[in-house]
Length: 241
Image (tube, rainbow, N blue to C red; front, side, top):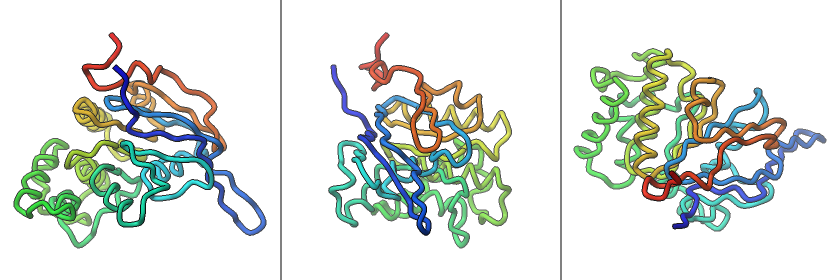
């Protein structure tokens, strides 16, 4: 049985102009990520990994090529449609967390669901479930400045996991966590992609890359190596034995 990718890059390039200099953050990148698949993106600092995530989630637009998310061509979407897709189908874990300082941990996690029209009570219940899963049930009513860096990162991860998002994008999601908690985070991602999502994780952690289904190595904006076979990864009922 064939299946469509959750994320597809087709000849994607992203160039920035700094004065008279052109910086090629991505160059002709093509790859696909399927439901049930955890893909790690590795490479040196400045290689283009964060740009790749921003383009994948519609936070930035390619200079050339096309990006498709869950069957939707991002280049063909209007501003409102793109915002709706990012809210409902894409979960982000940013390197700097991007938590709202005026909201508690539970309110930060619940926010995407409330914006999607879910009742406040239901959104809070879902948020508490996600916070419990990342070991922060007792911190639900604390504000970001009352949490450690590692705790803030776990709140950000819980916010990315809430709802039925199809694509999870994470920029160093275990960077501020101890080894045991970082392993738990990968376990959480595994549970979610086992239910039909796909995950792309930028990481410098060898342990995270070792647990990925595939590893994509990027350098100077170009994909220089990739391990694993995307054709063998998909929903549980479609996986190659």
